[in-house]
View 1: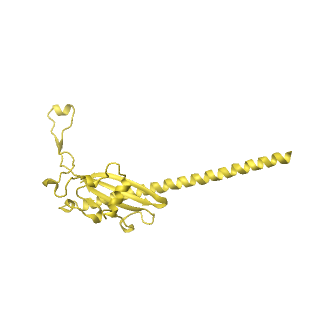
View 2: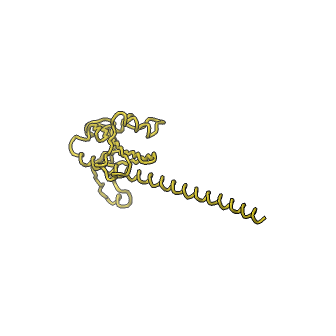
View 3: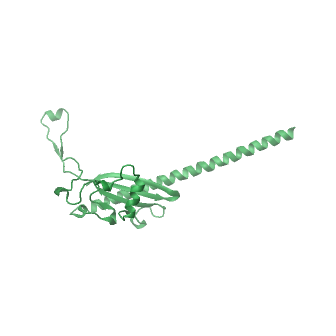
Length: 191
């Protein structure tokens, strides 16, 4: 009888050990996947910074008035064809841009994430309906030119704060990483 009880306890302990081992393995896999996703998002942030630096470097003159596929730049990003269509996913839309060679893919030399296994692709859209000079009918979405603070100071003859209008740019980064990790990071910036 003692032998039978010992055998049952041994089988139960073996089953519990196997379940514990599988649980630890699953936890490690989940933690690893979360780390890859976090690394991909971080690489996307670096890509956004790189794209914003490219915009600032080319802000003078008329460079930003026309499309530049080598940096994934579209001067008429507010046009309907420059955004996902109704019901279209960002993945499908981005794949059409890749097929049209309208995406800037950062190489390891252009990035701070060398040897991480992450591949960053960027699209920069100037939020204008048409290409060309914003002051000549490009129909751009921009910030307001002037604003007045509200409150009791306004009634006392407060002067409006004047600020130059700034054009909005949408930067979208897609990161393809290890273990089929894919992350999108998007930012709206002004110059």
